[in-house]
Image (cartoon, rainbow, N blue to C red; front, top):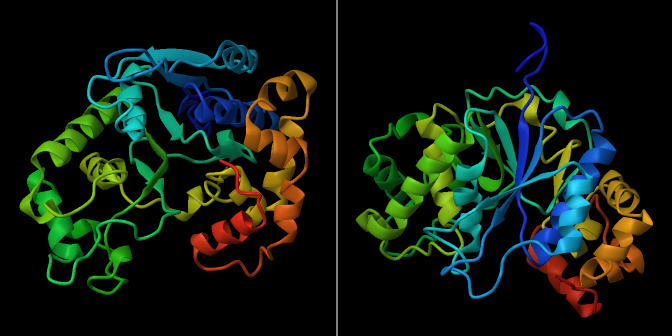
Length: 333
C-alpha cells in the first residue's frame, strides 16, 4: 500500500454514522477532510448500525445525510449490533470495526472531530497502535476504602494475561491517574480493524460480564470502551503516542465534542475550517435541520460564545465553561 521507500502507507479513515446527531457530525467530518486534506488517498468509511432487536427505532442515516456523505466520496458500510446497541451506543465503535476492510490500516475518529490539516502526512506506525491522550482522569473512581488505581488496573492486565509493569509512566507519582495507561477513545489506529475490533469486543464483554473483583463498585457506563482500549492497545504491542503524532488533537485534528465547546475553546483555525467547509448551500440546506448547527454556526451565535472566553486563559474545569454558556442561553447539543 505504499508507492516508494519513503512514502507513507495509505489508510482508511473510519467513523460511525447513524440517525440523529452523529449523522450531522459525520457530514461535518467528511466536509472538513475534503477541505483540509483534498489529496487524502485512503477511503472514508462510515460504519452504520442497522435496525434490529437492540434498537427501538431505526438507527440508519437519513437519506439527505447519506447523499451528502456519498457526495464527499464516503463509503457507508452497515453492521449488526450483536452485543451493544441503544443501551450502550459507544459500543458502535467496537462492533463497527468488524465490518471494516480486513487487513487494511485504519484511523478511527469520533464523528465530533474536525480535520484541520494534512491527515495523510502524519507518520503513523500501524504496527504499533495508539490512541488519544486528550483525556481526563475519569476512570477508575477511587473510593475512600476501596482499591487504588494500581490495584484496579493491575487486576485488568492480570485478567487478560498481559504484562502490567511496562504500561506505567514512571515519571508520574504512584496512585496518580496519569501514571496508568488511559486514553480517550476519540481516535485510535492499527493495521487491521477486524483484528482490533474482535479483541476490543472480547475484552469489553469480559470486563462488563466477568470483570475482576476490584471492579465490583466501578461504573462502566459510559467508560467501558476507555477501560478496554488501553488493554487492547498494549496487547498488540502499542502504547502512548509519540511526539510525531502531536498533530492529532493538535493542528491536524480537533476533537471538539460539542459545537458550543468548539466555539468556546478551540483554535481560530478550527472555527474557520468548520464555517467554510459547511457553507455551500447544498450542505447548509441539510445541516440547518440540526438545531445546534442552525443556531451556532448559520445564525452565528457561536461568535457570542467565542467572545465570552479567553482561549489563552480558559477555566480549568470544562463544567465551568458549560455553565457559563448555559447561563447565556446558548447551550445546544
